[in-house]
Image (tube, rainbow, N blue to C red; front, side):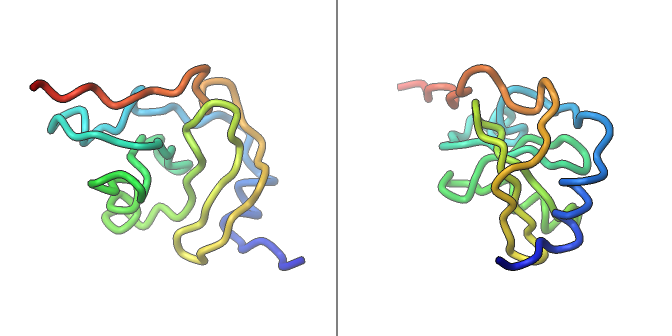
Length: 112
């Protein structure tokens, strides 16, 4: 088994407080009327962005703009993390209340 990168190791072992999500949906999609598939939470600043299966890929764009390396799933019951910098996954990380929503937040429906 490959050892976790230093970013994921630090997240997995040294977090002592929750990251507060920026909202219940992708920040940018909510502003522009965009849609998302799944949501990701930046573990550096709490930015909530849409995943790479979403049309706008805002979580990845946030990484490129900020260099914040680690996200976690912002989906109910999921507690995995991903390091963009080292392209590694950590299957299970400590998750604090509020870092995983109780329900899947769907993108707002576009007007007809």
